[in-house]
Image (tube, rainbow, N blue to C red; front, side, top):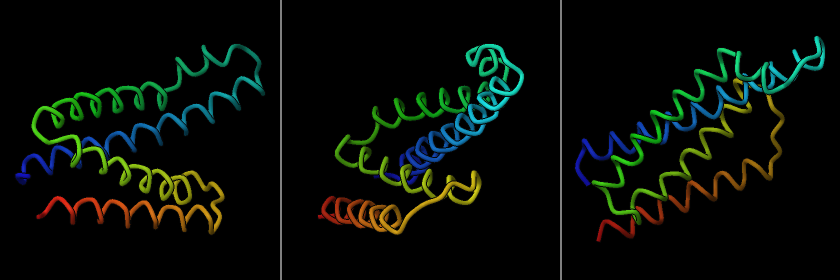
Amino acid sequence: MTLPSLMLLLFAVFSSAGGQIMLKHGMKGAAAAAAQGGGSLAVRAATSPWVVLGLVVFAVSAIAWMTTLAKVPLSIAYPFNALGYLLIVLAGATVLHERTSMWTWGGSLLVVVGLFTVMAGQQR
């Protein structure tokens, strides 16, 4: 895999995770606003800057992912989605202050070990 392909792949994964975190943050606020002030959750979400920005970032990540798939074998590209999972768990715990258990961290560690295992097998 070339360095530009790796950078595109990492951009796709990181932007996807970032978009998901923005969507979660926006939906949390939209749900609270709908519960407190009434109104439709859908309308609150559609007018939330975090939800709109999250959708835009997620759309950009989808374009980056499709471009990645045109250049990188799926057997190499797809395991990197595991990295996205780890990023979301980390951001959920640190940015969104969500509670995570030792089981979550242990499972996340296994996902990372799996990513390294797949990548080591591709280096042959």
